[in-house]
Amino acid sequence: MDFEDPYELEDWEDDKILFEKEDWPNLLKLREERANKSPSDLYAQQRFAESLNLNKRFADTLEFITPLYRDNYEVGFGIHEIIEALYGLGKSENDFNWIEKPKIIKLDSDALKLCVDFLKPKRKVSSITDIYCDLIMQGDYSDFNEEQLAEFLLKNTDTIDIKTDSEYHWDMKIKLKRK
Image 1 (cartoon, rainbow, N blue to C red):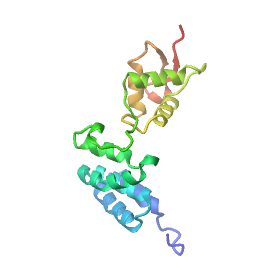
Image 2 (cartoon, helix red, strand yellow):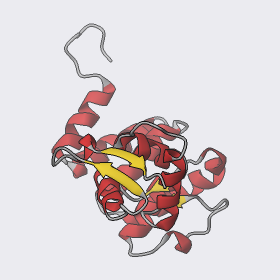
Image 3 (cartoon, rainbow, N blue to C red):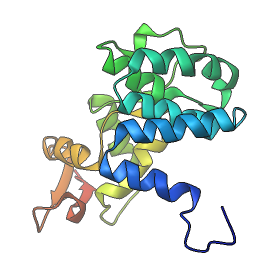
Image 4 (cartoon, rainbow, N blue to C red):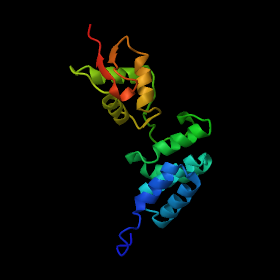
């Protein structure tokens, strides 16, 4: 940052602008430059790998991030980028030689059980955001967002009571059905 020019963009701002415009080629150039400039900065390396995925260069992502994952797997480094690249190549998480297999949360009966476990001790209603945040903290990767989780829970109302006063998923009031 140039302190002489107070109107110059900070480092994160140009990245944000390109991301919001979905200008993946220029985002890739920017992040590659930053990754090359700071090879010991894992965050810069991870963001470069993410931009490779956004540019659908999935094989390049795996080639780039795998050695970094192998050196830093104990902190969960690179899992998201690796899985996204595998999915982009039409593969599954089982098609990678993990040092420590990540916990992947999918919208299935296991996720429903985690939701029920979260709601059990609660007497008051919870929001979809409360449940989503709890779920994503329980795994290394989740392949859904809040809206998809809300749709999933709406299909499982035999164990979960859902009240919705609007069309928006974030307005849902969720609690466990009591027997």
